[in-house]
Length: 286
Length: 289
Image (cartoon, rainbow over all chains, first blue to last red; front, side, top):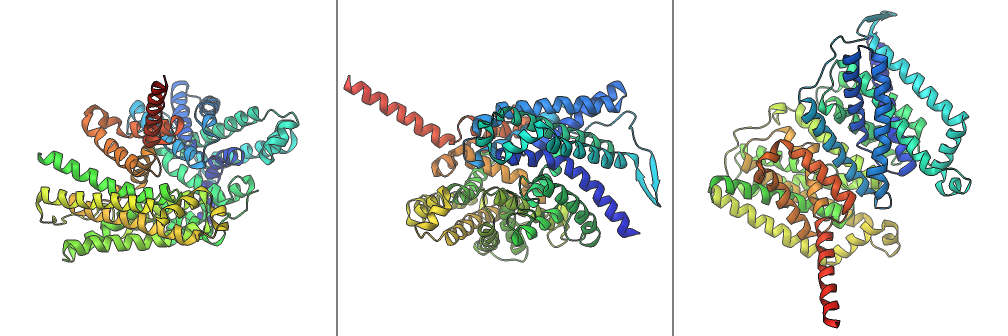
């Protein structure tokens, strides 16, 4: 029973990691940027979702608005911050992104206070009993919405013209341009979808702990970076598998080796071990 | 100089050693490290344990240097396996791993850290003189490396690893050398910090510290010794001189890091170079007229 419970907890965390990391891996696949500030957008999503939900008492409205606004912020971030430095060596964008993330965290702290905000009437807190295992409905909601969102994303990329244009651009920007694809539009779309997903994940995380705080982006951001590296940078399927795997490894690790490594250290120890064995990640990118 | 100025100067000198160490790895040799604070921490904790065991000061600092350097060598081996973005994330992971281990070890004080470390027994001024001497030595060492054959090889590795390999530069050996030297310098800085602070906390050596050091290197102009020293002095003193900044310290750091990368990726050094060029060009133009 313990194993099953750990496995389920791991998969719940893993599905959240997946929603965050997919946006990150989409950006990496297209632009070869390690987009650390993605976690800032994730935290922004949590804040907006909470503020709107508290103001209107409607969680769906809060989540939807937060996703749209954060998606637009993501597009602005690409336009204002990344586009001008794309032709520089990769470390330039990486350091700029870290700077941006730190600045965002600080702005959250200064604007919303250091102790975080909570929901007035936390939604989705009821308990659900599933085959003898008690889960909170926020956890179930998170897994279900992760499945739906990633399903929609898969459908978009496989079956629609936009999706085909997107995949072509990731594959070879020059050739897709010569086929008449507006690659700049593809980049905006990419940032919009990735950031909106991060915002939804942010709202769900804030529901799980009934808290949004300035530093909430910290750990998921570093972990999401670890995940996309594990998944073979830019490989979406690999990222999804790596997310679930990391969630499960962490859940079991905290029980069995938690006495000398904390949760984050376990994640990174796992990452380092895997990278030493397979430097290109578990699922080699293109 | 009052006690306040003396301790400020000591912090600046320690940071200079730390930043020049990272500059060796990321600046000269082009290997981006996001986990430099881990080696700073290894040096500090090693020195602290040695002090507590009763060893005298030169030995403790040397032990910090060696343990950090050996750890750096091991991480350097990772740099032979993974490159670029993969390496950046791996080094970041090393930082979190260090923190995770320290937090859970009773021997290292866990979350509470190590307190009650005796002072170096040299007086505040005397200690500053020692730290200053070591910082100057690090600067001279950096300049010497930069101009040596090894410096050229580092440059080649940073520029284009594969081409360097084609012209028979032993890329692996030079990367390892850069990691060993850079992290050993971080270890020395850590040891010196131990005697200065006399109290160690795991969070002193976290990701934010790594990023702070990286911003010193990046703002100074990656690879430029004088640029890095100037940026270290400015970034360390800025929050002290503008007291109103202190609450916004990290915001300023983050914004500055972003702004420098966005608008002047070559940092202070690049800025100075441009200004100098513009001046000399103007002078020449004036002479011809």
